[in-house]
Image 1: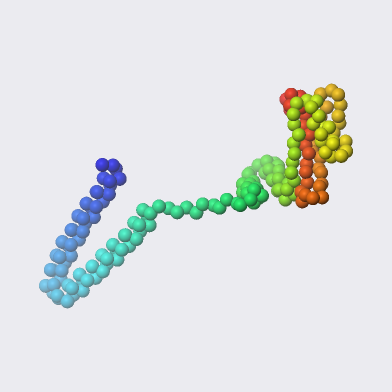
Image 2: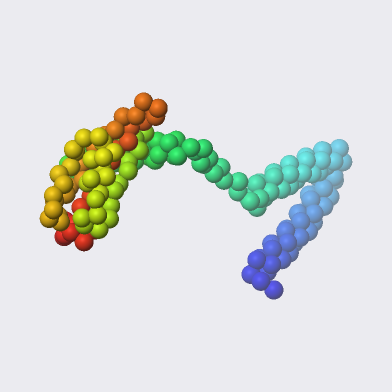
Length: 189
């Protein structure tokens, strides 16, 4: 028999013994009061029975509330990725307010604002990467229709990825082309 079963068996035995003691006590009380006034004894027993019923109903009600499984209200996941990102940024803003270091709080707030504005713009970032001297910068230049990155014979000409913004008339968002250094030439940075 498990611990839980032993506990409930002990509780049932204690409740049964308590009920027997209460009945014996009420019988003795009735006999004592009945000697003075039988009507008063009946009213007293009726009142005790009423209080016992109220206590039993209350006990059953709160026991059911305590024993029933808790229904946790799970948060609803946003339907779109944009709504999920906005909810995450809202939660981030609340957490940023709790940071005590002013410099860290301001830096995180600025980063959060940049992410929020990028979320509002809904830009599409296309990152071009590969090995050195494979034509990544030439591809970005061709897509941009202008020379936005330097093309040279030696490997390692491409510097930090800034990105070039393309606005297309058929698309409600901008394309940002990000040219990267060759995989083997990016170095420690």
